[in-house]
Image 1: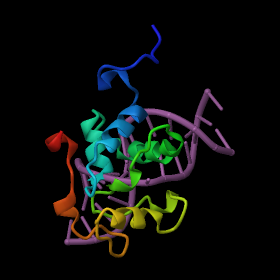
Image 2 (image 1 turned 30 degrees about the vertical axis):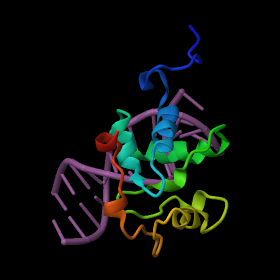
Image 3 (image 1 turned 90 degrees about the vertical axis):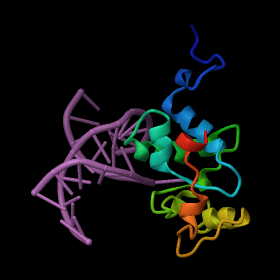
Image 4 (image 1 turned 45 degrees about the horizontal axis):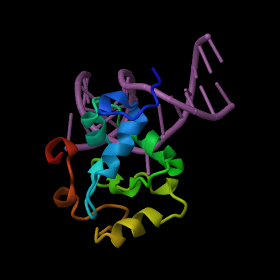
Length: 118
DNA sequence: CGTCTGACGCACG
DNA sequence: GCGTGCGCCAGAC
C-alpha cells in the first residue's frame, strides 16, 4: 500500500513530517524547544534531528513557523539558517515575542510544551 | 560503504 | 558546578 496516502494518525508519518505537524501547532506568539518536539513525537534525544528537519522545512508546501522553535535556553540557535541575519528575531518580535541578545526574554512564560498543551 | 557533521540535550566525571 | 563526550538519524563527501 502506498505510504503516501493521507495519514490518519501521526504514526503513519515519518519523522520529518511529524516535526512539521507539531511545529505548525505552536500558537502565535508562543515558542517551544527542539527537545520538547523530539520527545513528543516519540524520539526523545533526537533534538538535533528536529533542527535538521526544520532546516529542510523551507521547501514545504505549507508554511512551517520554524522561528517559534528555539533551544532549551530560549536561544535562537537556528537564526543563521534563515535568509537574513535577524529574520528569526524579527519574525518573533513581530508576534510580540521579546528577543534580547538572540534570546527569548520571557522564554519560561511563553514556552509551549506539546506534551502538556496538546 | 565508512566517516563526519549537524537549528540539541543529557549523562558522567 | 562546569567541562567533556556521546546518542539521536539523515545527508554530504
